[in-house]
Amino acid sequence: MKYGSITEEVLQKLKSIAGAEHVFVDEETLTIHASDHTEDHVFMPQVVVMPGTAEEVAAVLKLCNDHVIPVTPRGGGTGLSGGALPVKGGVVVAMKRFNKILEIDELNLQATVEPGVITEVFQDAVQEKGLFYPPDPSSKGSCFLGGNLGENAGGPKAVKYGVTRDYVLNMQVALVTGEVIWTAANVLKNSTGYNLTQLMCGSEGTLGIITKIVFKLRPFPKKDVTLLVPFTTSEEACRAISGIYMAGITPSKMEFVEREAIILTMKYVDEVLSQPVSIELPENINAHLIIELDGNDDEVLMTDAEKIVEILENYETGEVYFAQSAEEKDGLWRLRKNVSPAVNSYTLTKAEDVVVPRGNLPKLITAIKEIGKEYGFNSVCFGHAGDGNLHINVMKEQISDARWNKEINEGIADIFKAVVDLGGTLSGEHGIGIAKRPYMHLAVGEKNLDLMRGIKSVFDPKGILNPEKIF
Image (tube, rainbow, N blue to C red; front, top):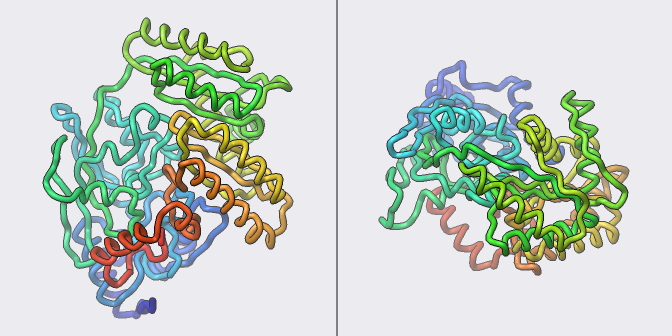
């Protein structure tokens, strides 16, 4: 694809659309928008535009479409698959000015928001009204709701409550034609034609740019119980998960953390965050599950917790620890939330998130470690084990750049092959972006890819929207 260039005429038109004070060509701003949290990738845009209305976004898209200039939508820049990287330069449309919570409708348990609202800010706002927005990505303190939609983010609570797409009723989207559409209606049931709302979820900004979102909400669960369960092996921890579900218990969180992840993260939260958390790590303990139960009835929660302890007697565990206070609970979840930052502060990583049927997690863990031995890399595994979503951080450590960029990628391809062989797929919540694009054929048939390309061509016939992502 041959793209057009940003001429002085185009630059002036961008300024007339968004205002000169919201169009940036200085090196500092361009550099900030050239990378995200994906390895050490850097792709410089030529211009960063920060529009403030849906009409301005649509006008920017039409201008770029007319001149065949690539456009990359960007939220909080916390992505791990390169979905917001301007690999073809051009224009980055940064959505930080779209930061308003427009309405919280307590009667209908809905909220209308702009895509630049930080996820945790939204969660806190609805919680003040006794309501609950469950999607809970680890980067919730800085990621944007629009980016969550683009990648279909999940988080620990997805095991009970679902992922971002499960809470979207309707959205406003700017198209490359310069038009602005709503994808559905603000209703709980809708069988009126194709589901454009769900199509936009996980599309990584390749079809249009989201400018408003209508989310459905739930009543906020007022009580919770948190357990920390040590296991002798990672495989044994993964086996215990199925046992808990077979007993009819659905935790609100079920998180798996390897021993190495605990060690690195305890050091990180102590030395970097100055918020130490201490967990005893006997030599025979190699993995933990952090389990949360939530609801509104203490008696029911404790009954389920006691059932879990009984079930765990069938597995090779250490002593089960009940967090006794809000502070202790926060400490455990602070550890889990900071695993990825801790590992990345230790060494450069290739961060993958894969999903298998949760019964196959033990086999997957074994396969990952065997592949690591074959290719000579160490990995740290953790993640949302309750729904089979495992995060794998392959660590660079002393590996040479040449091996890191070639042989280690071959090892990652073998991991993805193992995932597919176990009935899984390449991503549960980080998206495909550029990081997993070379491996799509392993999980998705060529006919499926052709259908996806066809959909893309309907929305974006000139291929300007977030080019070279997914395909």
